[in-house]
Image 1 (cartoon, protein in one colour):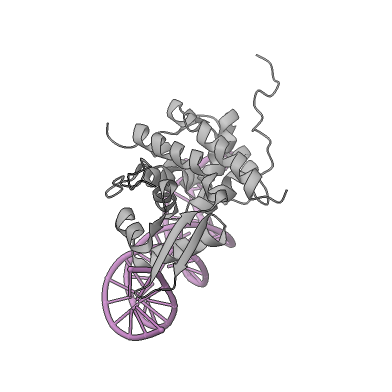
Image 2 (spheres, rainbow over the protein chains, first blue to last red):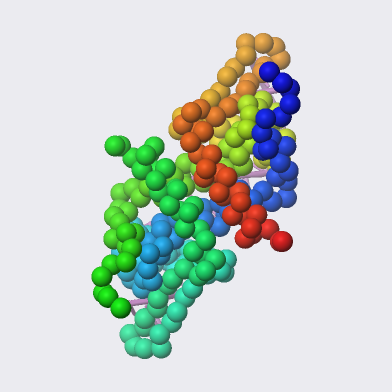
Length: 115
Length: 115
DNA sequence: CGGAATCCCAAGCGATACTG
DNA sequence: CAGTATCGCTTGGGATTCCG
């Protein structure tokens, strides 16, 4: 009907850092989504997390956790005991991702997995 | 307090296809988020899309669009004219991603970009 | 204009071994 | 237990060229 713009998205300037892209860079790592998902509810030890995620290798789990830590999404608590004990949990900033992770999960269930 | 589980996330079986991971694989491609974002509001031609996204190369834009097409998220309409004209738009399935893309955007704005 | 094909470097990532 | 180190394959993705 009218030639007027019907959307607020069309001419959004993405050059030099689109928020959508930026967010995906933070949570889009190969294992980050799943990791965050498993930390949504509770603190987990390294080994627990690895078992929960499934097929991730130690190397990758460590790397992804370090990156999430650097982004301030995950907190790493080291207990000075032997054998070593390290617990991972979401920071407050990490908690704010909950709606996103939840949406990702429900969308995937509805549109991706056989049902 | 209690040792009872306080979350519904903890023991979710992710092995062999976690919904969160699956969804991220669909929208997590390097340019897919931004592409979807720019298609949220309106249909766009190839060239428009490329300019909107910014620094993406033709090759990558094409590749990512093909993948989104295969997932049934994006529709490709070819006009049999010369010079060629191709329009991209979201399918109905693609539209269902709107809440996710929107959330990604607002989260990124609030937590990632300087403010 | 919108794409396909080729080339090629760099990053990603798994496997394995070692360590405090 | 929770890492780190090294190796080497595989993949991603940019640059460029050609085409209908």
